[in-house]
Length: 223
Image (tube, rainbow, N blue to C red; front, side):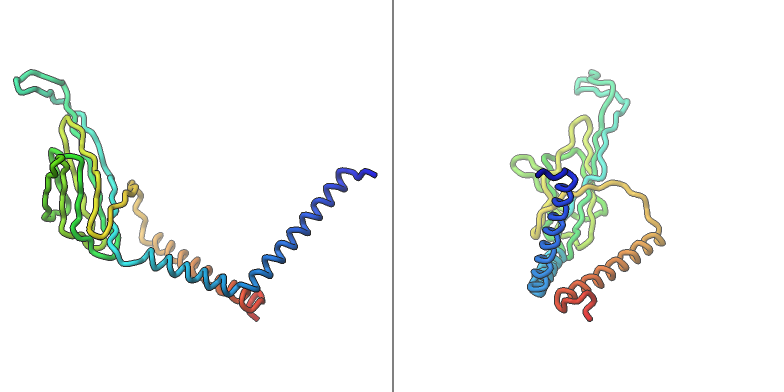
């Protein structure tokens, strides 16, 4: 005796529902049995992650917010006075270096592939220069306080700019980050945003408490 496709399909769906119900029952029993242990493990992982992320340390971040090549309508002459080119190219670039950590970064080193024609920093701070035996160009700052920023500006005429090879300090190695302009947000919008964030955090904490009560007391609302 052959069953119609509709009957077979209905039986398959019923069987699938039954299997899902059984699976949910097994998961519920597992959570009720080991809910305390699972919650304790999750809390331990969260505390460890927050402690690792917010640990007091120096963290250097490096970005290149600006780079441009200017085509200058000025002829270029060689040493003998002969015109080599009708135009010249001036290359510029800026680098943003910030200590995003909570600890002072000491002995900060900014290493370029070779020495640029012109090098400037802002804000004005004393720094040292070291030229390595392989012609690398090293700029050294004694320290960089938490949240302190240094911008480095380099400039070359008719030659390529050197690459920024490495930024490091005694505590860490610099991490490259992307940087781009963005609109300035008004104070009112920022306050509304922070209020929504606080509301979301409070709601999350409340739901977490309800979940703990359900896992520990095995009742939806802890009664």
